[in-house]
Image (cartoon, rainbow, N blue to C red):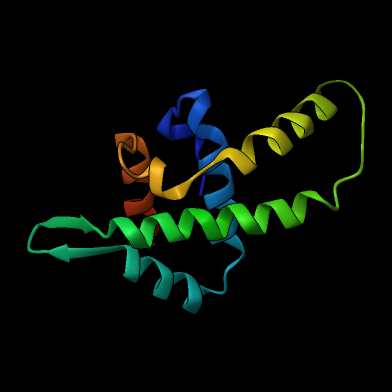
Length: 115
């Protein structure tokens, strides 16, 4: 899923990028099951399960942290980006993030669940 259309604030990009990569790498059945635990229809309204969303964020964070270990060191903007990710990612707390998630993030999750 393309995250550009949501116009996330820079502070949200690390979370969104990790979750997006995590969901993309799940097998379709596992992705559907994961998202069904996070968001469900209640009539015409989508209902988000906060603890399940926090768990999704934490799982995405852990997977990303493992994956970033394999990235090779570089130069310039690549290295600055890698350093930023390595610094910012461990600080993410799914439970804290979902206390006041941006509306774009919830739409992003809803869009993923609709696929």
